[in-house]
Length: 312
Image (cartoon, rainbow, N blue to C red; front, side, top):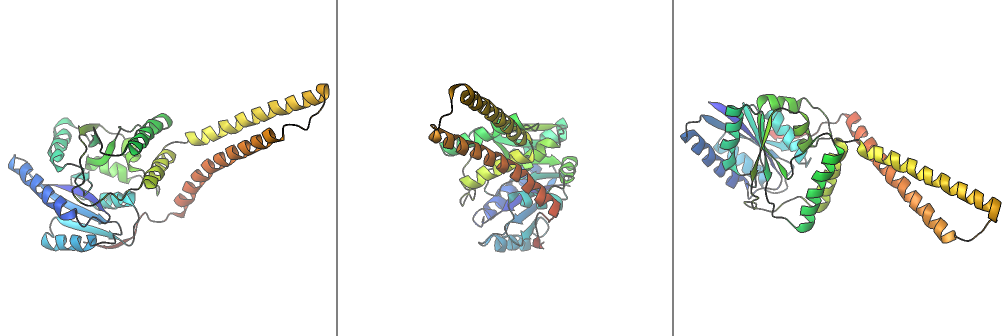
C-alpha cells in the first residue's frame, strides 16, 4: 500500500482540523473503493497557534497514531517554514500540500493522482477560476501575477494555490534548495519538471476566519518578486542614470543662461520641489538596494527556518 503524505499548515485552526480530517478520510475511502490502494500520512504543522489547535492535534494523534502526526513550532514562524517542515518530514511516495480550511477540495486528489501515475507528470497544481474576495484584493492579486511574470524568469499560473500533489523526485528537488527566504510558489516553478495545472472554482472556508491581512499579502508579494528577480535593482540603476542625465542638462542650461542672459534668483519654489523629488528618488532606490541587502543578511546568518518544540 503506497503512502500519500498530506502537509497541512495550521495557525489557530481549531474549528477546521476535525472537519478536514473527516473529509480526507472519506476521500481515501472512496479512492480505495475504486480500486486504488493508498493510505494517508497526515502531517499537521502547528505554526505557534494560540488557540486549542495543538490540543486537538494531540487528540487526533492519540486516536489515529498510525496516520495522524503533528509538528509543533516553538512560536509562529509563518506558512512558508510550516510547509518546509512538512515536506522535510513527509515520507510518502507522493506528497500533497493542502490548507486545513477545505478551500483546497479533497475530491480533486484522485484526479491529481491519476495525472502523475498515468500521464508521467511530476507535479499537479491547482488554480482557482474564481475567488470570493473584495475588488481591491482581487486587483492586487491579479497585478502581482502580471508583475512577477514580467520581472522574473519564473512564470506563475494566475491564482495558483499552494495545493498540489508531487512525486518524490519533485519533493527532493524542492528540498535541495536550502535558502532561508522562501517563496514556495516560485520555488515550485523554478525546479521545473513536467507539471499540470487544473482549475477549480473558489470555495468558502469550512470554518474559522482567514489570518492573512492585506498588509501581509502585500509584503508576501514583495518578497516573492525580490526572491526571484533582480529587475528592481536594474530599475533603480536606470532611474539613477536618468536622474543624473536630467541634472546634467539642467546645469548646462543654468550656465548657458547665466553667461548669455544674466543670472536670476527667481524659481526657488520649483528648485525646492526638484530637490525634494530627487531626494525621494534616491531614497526609493536606496530602499530597493536595502531590501536585497537585508535578504543577504538573513541568508548569511544561517539561522534555521523554524524551531520544533515537539512532534509525534
